[in-house]
Length: 101
Image (cartoon, rainbow, N blue to C red):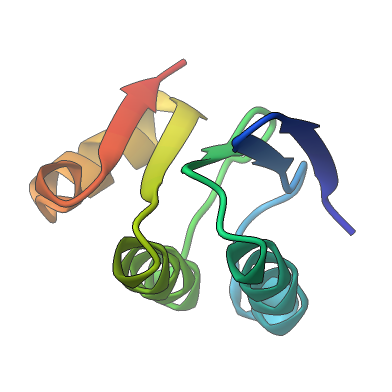
């Protein structure tokens, strides 16, 4: 279960563990429930996350797409250096904000 902080129209989600296939369904469900509340900004704080696999990236992309349709924006913050390199190589930073730790 992620730590979820709500401040007005901004919601911050801290998964606190690697965003990989074994936790993807639970994480996807948490994010989907948040998107239903129509936040203006959803920040996913990757503090303490050392690995994001292809399934985790898929969850982030699907979250961005759903949030975008609802008029919100996605930010991924405190991204470890290796993960940041992966995200920029995949050009994910062109679709949503990616901020390194």
